[in-house]
Length: 211
Image (cartoon, rainbow, N blue to C red):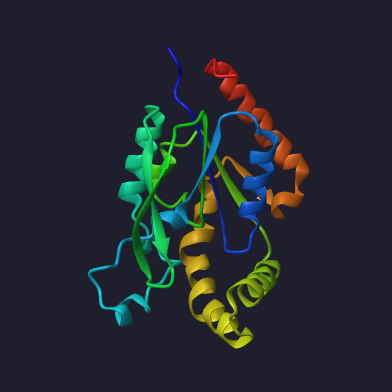
Protein backbone atom coordinates (compact mmCIF):
# COMPACT_ATOMS: atom_id res chain seq x y z
CA UNK A 1 0.00 0.00 0.00
CA UNK A 2 1.30 3.43 -0.95
CA UNK A 3 2.21 5.59 2.02
CA UNK A 4 1.10 9.19 2.47
CA UNK A 5 2.97 12.03 0.73
CA UNK A 6 5.60 14.11 2.52
CA UNK A 7 4.40 17.60 3.45
CA UNK A 8 6.97 20.40 3.87
CA UNK A 9 6.07 23.83 5.23
CA UNK A 10 8.29 26.77 4.26
CA UNK A 11 7.59 30.03 6.11
CA UNK A 12 9.36 33.36 6.57
CA UNK A 13 8.83 37.06 6.10
CA UNK A 14 8.16 38.84 2.83
CA UNK A 15 11.44 38.99 0.89
CA UNK A 16 13.14 36.42 3.11
CA UNK A 17 13.94 34.01 0.28
CA UNK A 18 11.17 31.42 0.78
CA UNK A 19 10.64 31.14 -2.96
CA UNK A 20 14.34 30.59 -3.68
CA UNK A 21 14.45 27.79 -1.09
CA UNK A 22 11.32 26.25 -2.58
CA UNK A 23 12.76 26.44 -6.10
CA UNK A 24 16.05 24.92 -4.95
CA UNK A 25 14.27 21.92 -3.43
CA UNK A 26 11.99 21.60 -6.45
CA UNK A 27 14.99 21.65 -8.80
CA UNK A 28 16.76 18.87 -6.91
CA UNK A 29 13.66 16.68 -7.05
CA UNK A 30 12.98 17.43 -10.73
CA UNK A 31 11.75 14.26 -12.35
CA UNK A 32 10.25 13.06 -9.09
CA UNK A 33 6.69 13.62 -7.93
CA UNK A 34 6.66 17.07 -6.29
CA UNK A 35 4.16 19.95 -6.11
CA UNK A 36 4.20 23.48 -4.70
CA UNK A 37 1.18 25.12 -3.11
CA UNK A 38 1.56 28.79 -2.25
CA UNK A 39 -0.50 30.06 0.67
CA UNK A 40 -1.22 33.18 -1.42
CA UNK A 41 -3.53 31.04 -3.58
CA UNK A 42 -5.81 30.75 -0.57
CA UNK A 43 -6.65 34.36 0.20
CA UNK A 44 -10.31 34.53 1.22
CA UNK A 45 -13.07 35.17 -1.28
CA UNK A 46 -14.23 38.78 -0.85
CA UNK A 47 -16.85 38.98 -3.59
CA UNK A 48 -19.50 39.81 -0.99
CA UNK A 49 -17.69 43.04 -0.07
CA UNK A 50 -17.79 46.36 -1.96
CA UNK A 51 -14.62 47.02 -3.95
CA UNK A 52 -13.68 49.93 -1.67
CA UNK A 53 -13.70 47.56 1.31
CA UNK A 54 -11.57 44.98 -0.51
CA UNK A 55 -8.90 47.63 -1.08
CA UNK A 56 -8.40 47.79 2.69
CA UNK A 57 -7.45 44.10 2.90
CA UNK A 58 -4.39 43.40 5.05
CA UNK A 59 -2.77 40.53 3.17
CA UNK A 60 -0.16 40.05 5.91
CA UNK A 61 -2.73 39.17 8.59
CA UNK A 62 -3.76 35.56 9.38
CA UNK A 63 -7.43 36.49 8.81
CA UNK A 64 -6.67 37.11 5.12
CA UNK A 65 -6.23 33.38 4.46
CA UNK A 66 -8.83 30.66 3.97
CA UNK A 67 -6.93 28.03 5.93
CA UNK A 68 -10.04 25.84 6.21
CA UNK A 69 -10.00 25.30 2.44
CA UNK A 70 -6.21 24.89 2.34
CA UNK A 71 -6.36 22.22 5.08
CA UNK A 72 -9.20 20.46 3.29
CA UNK A 73 -7.15 20.38 0.09
CA UNK A 74 -3.99 19.13 1.80
CA UNK A 75 -6.00 16.31 3.36
CA UNK A 76 -7.36 15.40 -0.08
CA UNK A 77 -3.84 15.32 -1.50
CA UNK A 78 -2.69 13.14 1.40
CA UNK A 79 -5.29 10.63 0.22
CA UNK A 80 -3.93 10.96 -3.32
CA UNK A 81 -7.05 12.77 -4.52
CA UNK A 82 -6.81 15.76 -6.90
CA UNK A 83 -7.86 19.25 -5.83
CA UNK A 84 -9.30 22.31 -7.55
CA UNK A 85 -6.92 25.01 -6.40
CA UNK A 86 -8.35 28.52 -6.19
CA UNK A 87 -6.98 31.44 -8.19
CA UNK A 88 -6.81 34.89 -6.63
CA UNK A 89 -7.55 38.01 -8.69
CA UNK A 90 -5.29 40.76 -7.32
CA UNK A 91 -6.90 43.36 -9.58
CA UNK A 92 -10.37 42.76 -8.13
CA UNK A 93 -9.02 41.82 -4.68
CA UNK A 94 -11.09 38.66 -4.48
CA UNK A 95 -11.05 35.06 -5.57
CA UNK A 96 -11.47 34.36 -9.26
CA UNK A 97 -14.18 32.05 -10.58
CA UNK A 98 -11.37 30.06 -12.20
CA UNK A 99 -9.78 27.05 -10.48
CA UNK A 100 -6.79 24.89 -11.43
CA UNK A 101 -6.86 21.12 -11.07
CA UNK A 102 -3.76 19.81 -9.30
CA UNK A 103 -2.97 16.12 -9.26
CA UNK A 104 -1.56 14.54 -6.07
CA UNK A 105 2.21 14.12 -5.72
CA UNK A 106 4.59 12.36 -3.36
CA UNK A 107 6.09 15.62 -2.04
CA UNK A 108 3.91 18.63 -1.19
CA UNK A 109 5.58 21.97 -0.44
CA UNK A 110 3.41 24.54 1.34
CA UNK A 111 5.00 27.97 1.03
CA UNK A 112 3.84 31.21 2.60
CA UNK A 113 4.47 33.86 5.21
CA UNK A 114 2.06 32.28 7.69
CA UNK A 115 2.01 28.55 6.90
CA UNK A 116 3.38 27.81 10.38
CA UNK A 117 0.87 30.06 12.17
CA UNK A 118 -2.11 27.66 12.15
CA UNK A 119 -1.58 24.59 14.39
CA UNK A 120 -3.90 22.55 12.16
CA UNK A 121 -1.58 23.14 9.20
CA UNK A 122 1.52 22.44 11.25
CA UNK A 123 0.06 19.09 12.29
CA UNK A 124 -0.08 18.04 8.63
CA UNK A 125 3.62 18.78 8.03
CA UNK A 126 6.49 16.32 8.19
CA UNK A 127 9.14 19.05 7.99
CA UNK A 128 8.73 22.71 9.02
CA UNK A 129 11.20 25.31 7.73
CA UNK A 130 11.58 28.99 8.54
CA UNK A 131 13.66 31.17 6.22
CA UNK A 132 15.26 33.81 8.44
CA UNK A 133 16.69 36.90 6.74
CA UNK A 134 17.61 40.28 8.20
CA UNK A 135 14.96 42.99 7.92
CA UNK A 136 17.14 45.32 5.85
CA UNK A 137 17.65 42.63 3.19
CA UNK A 138 13.93 41.80 3.16
CA UNK A 139 12.84 45.42 2.65
CA UNK A 140 15.38 45.93 -0.16
CA UNK A 141 14.17 42.78 -1.93
CA UNK A 142 10.54 43.85 -1.50
CA UNK A 143 11.30 47.33 -2.86
CA UNK A 144 13.02 45.93 -5.93
CA UNK A 145 10.21 43.46 -6.61
CA UNK A 146 7.33 45.88 -6.10
CA UNK A 147 8.91 48.73 -8.08
CA UNK A 148 10.23 46.62 -10.97
CA UNK A 149 7.50 43.98 -11.25
CA UNK A 150 4.41 45.71 -9.89
CA UNK A 151 4.97 49.29 -11.00
CA UNK A 152 4.73 50.75 -7.51
CA UNK A 153 6.43 53.90 -6.25
CA UNK A 154 9.17 53.90 -3.64
CA UNK A 155 7.01 55.96 -1.28
CA UNK A 156 4.10 53.51 -1.46
CA UNK A 157 6.35 50.50 -0.80
CA UNK A 158 8.01 52.18 2.20
CA UNK A 159 4.67 53.36 3.59
CA UNK A 160 3.18 49.87 3.33
CA UNK A 161 6.26 48.31 4.89
CA UNK A 162 6.25 50.64 7.89
CA UNK A 163 2.49 50.59 8.51
CA UNK A 164 1.56 47.00 7.57
CA UNK A 165 4.37 44.62 6.65
CA UNK A 166 6.74 45.30 9.55
CA UNK A 167 4.13 45.26 12.37
CA UNK A 168 2.47 42.13 10.94
CA UNK A 169 5.86 40.43 10.65
CA UNK A 170 6.71 41.19 14.26
CA UNK A 171 3.29 40.21 15.57
CA UNK A 172 2.46 37.11 13.54
CA UNK A 173 5.32 35.85 11.33
CA UNK A 174 8.45 36.10 13.48
CA UNK A 175 6.84 34.21 16.42
CA UNK A 176 6.21 31.16 14.19
CA UNK A 177 9.97 30.64 13.96
CA UNK A 178 9.77 28.63 17.19
CA UNK A 179 7.70 25.96 15.44
CA UNK A 180 10.32 25.30 12.76
CA UNK A 181 12.35 22.09 12.70
CA UNK A 182 15.03 23.89 10.70
CA UNK A 183 15.79 27.61 10.47
CA UNK A 184 17.49 28.58 7.21
CA UNK A 185 19.40 31.89 7.31
CA UNK A 186 19.66 33.83 4.03
CA UNK A 187 17.29 31.72 1.95
CA UNK A 188 18.32 29.94 -1.23
CA UNK A 189 21.97 30.94 -0.85
CA UNK A 190 22.32 28.62 2.14
CA UNK A 191 23.26 25.48 0.24
CA UNK A 192 24.30 23.54 3.34
CA UNK A 193 20.88 23.94 4.95
CA UNK A 194 19.10 23.04 1.71
CA UNK A 195 21.24 19.90 1.34
CA UNK A 196 20.25 18.88 4.88
CA UNK A 197 16.57 19.38 4.08
CA UNK A 198 16.84 17.41 0.84
CA UNK A 199 18.55 14.53 2.67
CA UNK A 200 15.74 14.49 5.24
CA UNK A 201 13.08 14.47 2.52
CA UNK A 202 14.80 11.57 0.78
CA UNK A 203 14.97 9.64 4.07
CA UNK A 204 11.23 10.08 4.68
CA UNK A 205 10.41 9.08 1.11
CA UNK A 206 12.51 5.94 1.44
CA UNK A 207 10.87 5.11 4.78
CA UNK A 208 7.49 5.54 3.13
CA UNK A 209 8.61 3.24 0.31
CA UNK A 210 7.92 5.99 -2.24
CA UNK A 211 11.39 6.38 -3.75
